[in-house]
Image (cartoon, rainbow, N blue to C red; front, side):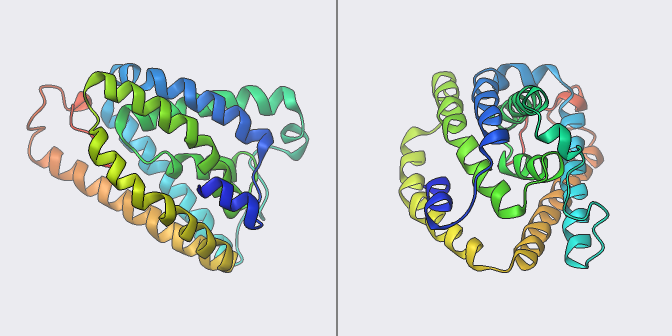
Length: 225
């Protein structure tokens, strides 16, 4: 609903990078829940926090007119225009983000939006619309895996989705109506709040001596989406 609204109302979607991330994200969602436990949980959480903080810094600097990238991507435009670069990179990043979000229960959009902005040079609204499109099949794949594992409440999810669908449409309309710098500040503040919350939770777990896990790096407890 959100991706369709972006496309219909006037938002743009980056199909060059988005298609690869969509395919990679769907594959990652199928295998992420099982593969992610093989990697240090603490390391993954710190990487997540790091990505959020870098994104916050870029958006705050952009709002202040001091963005060092000047709205461009980390990758040169010549590479972004080259399908031999865009396709494999977007596939790989999609698989990582899909596995990450499905395996850890993290909000995948908080990873996909920064990647699309920093690597492929998408503006914020384009990154948001592309992220929504990417996570449509990703969410289906992740739901199937978790339902089979008994780690999803299908009845509760159906009730939540009944309200989430019109909420997504409303959110897209509000985002497209806002000034891009204001929207960037809103996203930056939200991402910063999530990063601070995650660091505080890790601090409490460390202070408690890793209660609930023999190995603190592989704590089975998962952060909220």
